[in-house]
Length: 449
Image 1: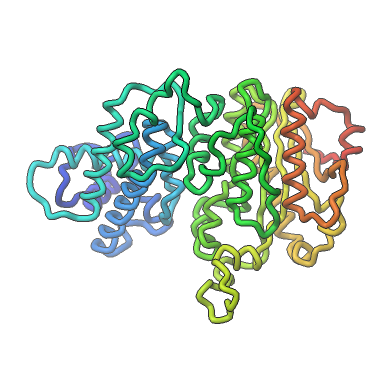
Image 2: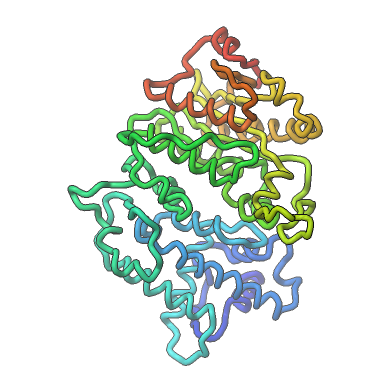
């Protein structure tokens, strides 16, 4: 047995479970699981008791995360989007993926069911037993033909009384979200802090869009706007796909959690650039010609420099998210990947080029190098993306302006409005089948790739 497999088994084995021989996490490598939990610190370099406890805490967090997302499990069943959503909600020192969450789940549920002795109750055993009951209940239901959600988030205790509404949509029942949204979209739309404002919205809805997010808005405001925009406009015939979450400047998934305390959890509502590009690959493979994203990165201060809400100087009673927003205002940038000729073109709508009040903002002026680095990272990730598609990145456009007066609107408002206009223009087909003169009239500058 390989060394890491032996270490992993020793760290995972505990009372209340019986683990069969062989690879403990099945198809997932043990070193990938340990790396997800411990990050760069190797498990075998830690005191055994500390490492053993850390694994138990991580596994307990995973099962509590599964339970917290029970309603989504009823809607999606064992779809990979469910496990990816749970993974994104759990803080570890490494990169926790949906495949790892599923492997940990299967390993522990199987080992718990195989155990025939007696073990004192622990938080982990309680969580595994509770999740097993939920999983068994869902397994007894008929297969779903469409992902459906209730009008309000349900508590775990309510789920057993709501199986009919969460399983197969009745023929005459209102089906929401619309069937054109895939499982990963449903996972975002299911968030309890969004659902009440989203439920029932569709292309037939007469409800108004919420206000544009600003440079100091809670990231949830950006999510709400993007979700509403998609619900009001996206159909099975749409040639575009809109990211339902804003994109940040993270270079790795761990930074979402590094910023979590400083932002009051706001940083976890963002996608990484890598995730946006992965979604874009799927969009193109599914026949889309446009992948649209709204990025609202921030620069300058490290997360540890952001004051805390319990600081005596916080006399205004601001929340941690409000303090972070004031110290780290966001820059609005829209990113579009567009099928063009024999490849893909990259469009970066950046208000810094055409809007002087944004360009000369002291905050952005002081962070020119960081902003340039972010811009380059978009290009690098786009180049990685097209390699996976097997096509070239043929050209790029940078800049852009709205065909309307913006007044003192900040960059996030301007970029979000541009995204809205692209989505509306996309109702009638591809809005970017234009010549170079039109791009220049729109305020864009050609970028050689």
